[in-house]
Length: 104
Image 1: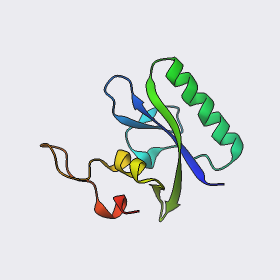
Image 2 (image 1 turned 30 degrees about the horizontal axis):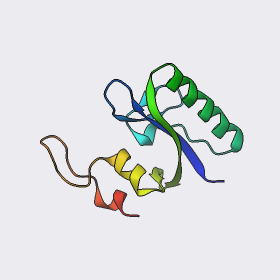
Image 3 (image 1 turned 45 degrees about the vertical axis):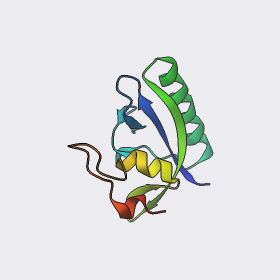
């Protein structure tokens, strides 16, 4: 089984967030709670559905990740961009993502 984390977008501002071990939504993928078996995956799905129903987040998804060198890496490019930021500088205060992290 592939490891998974629960991601969404905050309803208040649209920022990408991940569920952490304390049940909170954090802006760093590296703080996300990792589901390593089927039961944990089902629990994360249930938490995501409830958070959506409570109008805390939208676009709730379980995504595939792998841990390499103590760092979580999403398997899909879309999720790497959501985790790391834009692929180019586009506005003051928003630096381009690390190319090594984005590379698939």
